[in-house]
Length: 357
Image (cartoon, rainbow, N blue to C red):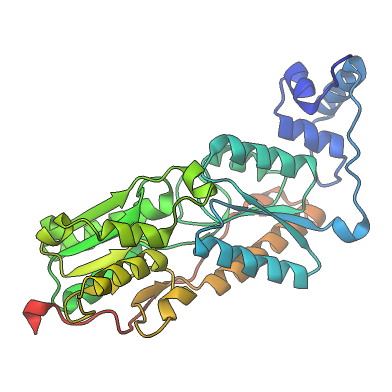
């Protein structure tokens, strides 16, 4: 049986990227390629016998966006994705949510799928593993990211100021008299957000002359285990606190990389007969539902998830409008950054350090 010719074959024959081939074959009016490039693709299709797949959608389904998440088992991502999906639906768009599991190959496959399906745009909920590919696609397809700003990522961004979030936590704890502070986290360097949170914590401790009094304990977690549901943030916080060596550091305050990790830390301490915040203070990040649960509510940092979701969709609508109606190249190439400054939310899990009482 003769092998079916695919867009990858056309891309290889023409020396173009698969996304460029897909955009040319889609016939979108807002896509601009040189006439000779279009002719080259058409000639390759005829020579190789390419038959386009049947990807037609009804009018009701044509306004489709892709939401790309790292891991929807992490409540921050699922909360943000749900907010964007709800806003999109209210504006006549449907959403497909993809879980990349921090896997570069999977991320690329979803990007190629988005191009083939001719989606209206993409919203990425974290800094991607293939920023160059996103940069390339953003020239012809609206792309928005909710992440920390970096120099090599040239798309519209709703900024996650994780550095400032960490500054707020350290300021709060040090003002309470805590001089030895520990962060508990899953693999800290698997994404940009975690890396910047650690960087911010270390920086601010150094500002107070406490550089050597900041500790990090982490659990290495691979994406396969996360995807299979074999590990979660709560168990990470709870299990790390079972290590007696943690208490030998003299830390009087613990920070969980997420509110859920912080909840695991708190439950482990309470189970061990410790009192919070009398003996230890606990903080988290993200101000999720889990932070507000009683009887122990968590001090945390609010990144304004609902506002970020709304801003991300509004930026996407702006990009869609530009590509559909505005041919001004300079206007199309302009990049926007929206920032919702994080806010410290103080609750019952933090108090004066034991030595400060």
